[in-house]
Image (cartoon, rainbow, N blue to C red; front, side, top):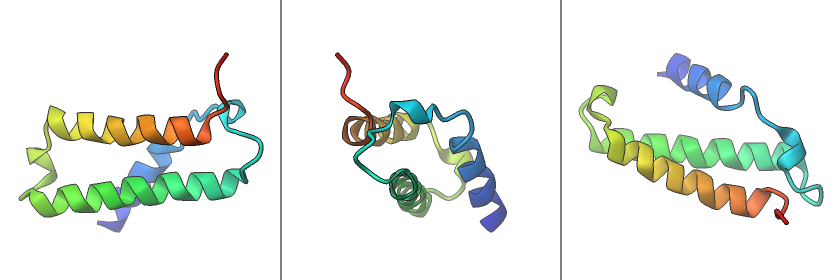
Length: 79
């Protein structure tokens, strides 16, 4: 389980464009919050499934909804 989590976090944090993040919030704290939200979402989803193989498009769509909320919170406003 820990190996899956570590690999998932590494993939999630790969190719991040740090220039998009707001400058008035400490970047390390933002990244921690993003990781915690996604870990919590994964744990909640895992509790509903017998295996990760049961995850489907609806789970990805729900994760994307959380990601969109975090983008609005942590990204610089666009013109």
